[in-house]
Image 1: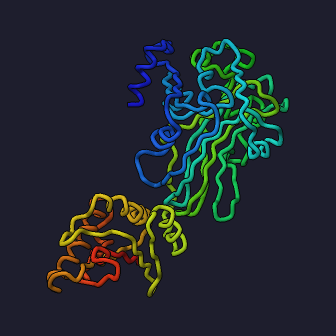
Image 2: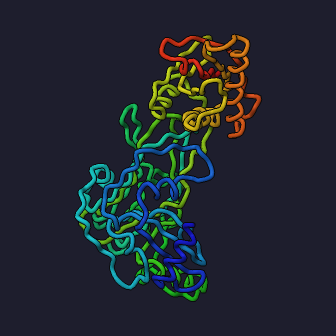
Image 3: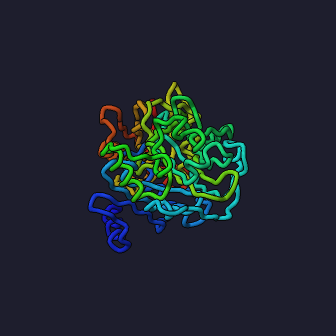
Length: 405
């Protein structure tokens, strides 16, 4: 759908130069759509995202689509700018320098040790179900090449905050030497293997047909004067624990000349090792995803989890709302090695033998749901515990409870 939409925009705007060379930017999407549909990996459920917020002008955030002969950028993804994302569109025959007059960002100022201006910031909370996350990005700027090492190195950051201690870590770095990614750190003279020139000052036609064709295509499609090659970023963290992610870019030193971040589409992934969360991590996880009260306690080296999966009178069919309630448990089982015991219960209405059978059907129904969603049958045991009384109402007795071991 994203691909078809951009092709339609392309024909309207006449931005394309040939059938296989196109670069289009669109600012029509909301921050929520951009993060959930086009940044988060759509092939797995290893990351839970919430509380998405954007601070900046509308034209500083968008989506891009690219198709070229030389794979200069990812095919699609999100784009963030210290000026205008639309100004990234070529040809490179003028200067992109939008002054947005948005506030400075203290985190970015600390990274670059200079004043910052024209910030654009995309933030959200996330929980990873494995012990690491990663994604792929590229940086581009109009500051290249004239303003390298001139005190105006535009800055961006990917800041991960651990809520348990409020410590921040910037992961917008080269993994091989932990170097911050900025024009002073990646250019023709420094870390040059990560740099691509897109300007007539640095590119000289020397008869190399492929190099000259690549430059000619890029300079037609892109406005920026230089950009990095694809860089993979990531971090080790504790699974099932909530973190804050801040993606930010700003002008440094002055408000002039735009820079851009390109985040590869659907590249934000949780793909580390599976580590069984402990009692505290599981408790915090269920508190963060379930509004109703969740009771978790340990008994004989087992974790008992009680949260509201209730059934109707004389019924063992899952209610519609139970599918959403069971999602956190499904995530926990999908990204851990825990086994599960499901205990079903019934109210005191009816004969004890009938209620025992009904309670077993309820636990079997939850087991069926989990198996249908990818959990191995050998990891799940279901039992009927019969009838129990409830001091509140009978509905509270028509339930299942869970034990992890």
